Image (cartoon, rainbow, N blue to C red; front, side, top):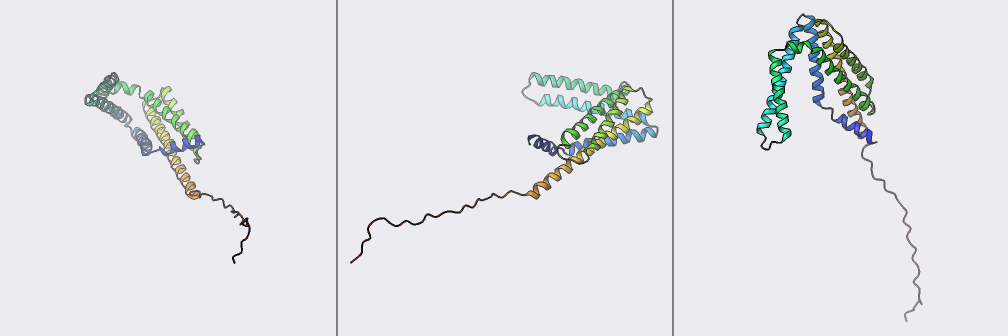
Length: 227
């Protein structure tokens, strides 16, 4: 009972943020795939790496601003600020010189996809299946396929065009698995609400007991007759 309630609470937390991540991955995969087939794979990869660098710069600036705004600074705050500054500097380097990152983009993208695909499988098997979601096996198949493709991206020495196409396909497969999980979670939520609505509040059962009224007993004592 406790496990089912826990699964339902996790399903309730499947929010728009999860779907947004899947949609971004899907769009990114289509961009990689279509532009690589059109002969623009290198440009797309370079832009993608620069976008990552810009995100790192933003994260670094945010950590510095947060540190400066905070009045009472502890050792952990200093650590976060120094680490954030290092990330921001690395982001600047990535934006200016994306070539070194392009050389290891297969490792970066492959590992990220493997981790995400593993999470898709875990959610489908460990949460959606016990909660009664339908066709949860589709998410498992998509997640496992994305994991296999992710390993191919990491460990196979592929040509740049082939690698970009494979990255695009893998992103799409992983995103489809994630979107399937989100749809299954929404379906499980609706089913649970229908069951609760159909059952309705249980009325309190009143046990009717026949009350046995005690028979009136004659008053003991001598009867006095009025004259």
